[in-house]
Length: 173
Image 1 (cartoon, helix red, strand yellow):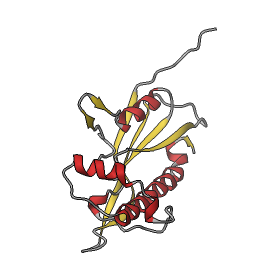
Image 2 (cartoon, one colour):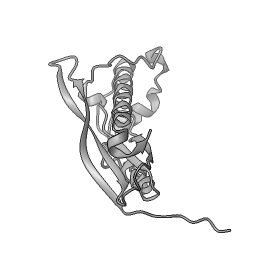
Image 3 (cartoon, rainbow, N blue to C red):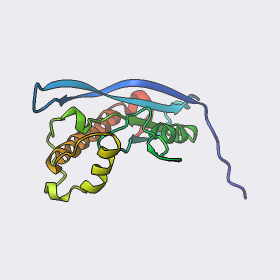
């Protein structure tokens, strides 16, 4: 028997505020909005049904990218943007959210989610290569560690926000 794949038209809701977070932590701290884009099948669901949901973040060594476009590479080798993955999941019946999170250049407050035991655990070789490609000077493992912890807080905030929308968005988190 042949598998049947249903492909849906996709509705995209851009710039949904999922939280607030601190940036410029070591100079003049300020709060900025955290945004997500929601991709969902355009077709309405029958009453009482819910769709699976996925929250995704772009790659970029905590230095580059955003929820819309994070293409990056050398020569002809580039990555697939997270927005394309979200659109693909939505075509298959999922609700998918692409989030922005704070990057090293924003000097984010590290927040309250300690995920790295020691800055020596941060793989600086890849991060140093990305900084070189972007024309940025070297940075410390401590700075990257603080950013990873801030980005983790941002993802936790996004997941909590999405779960809180379960009834309104007809999702099954």
